[in-house]
Image 1 (cartoon, rainbow, N blue to C red):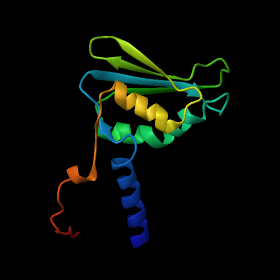
Image 2 (tube, rainbow, N blue to C red):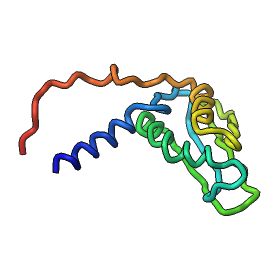
Image 3 (cartoon, rainbow, N blue to C red):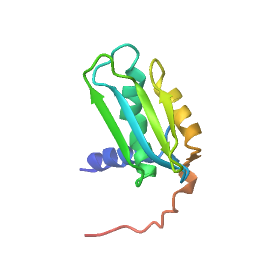
Length: 130
């Protein structure tokens, strides 16, 4: 039973901290990703970004609308579109890039503030009893 709680705590910690754990500026209004289901012609970085970095971004920016489109069309563009408050959009190509590079480009465009564990509230040492 304790091992299960440790696994859950570790999974939550991995979402809270890591690459992509950042708060976006209020200028960013929406995020849209488009890529294929399969790894085809350099789209592996987009899939890894979707699986590893996007959950952290969603956790730290809960009100940010994020849409993901994955399809089977071979002519599908592998891209991310960042919509700003003034209505402009910025496109980030994810084709043939590693997930860390995609994440860095997004954090730069979004003017994100990185999150660190030091920002977490101090633990009081109190336990909860049922």
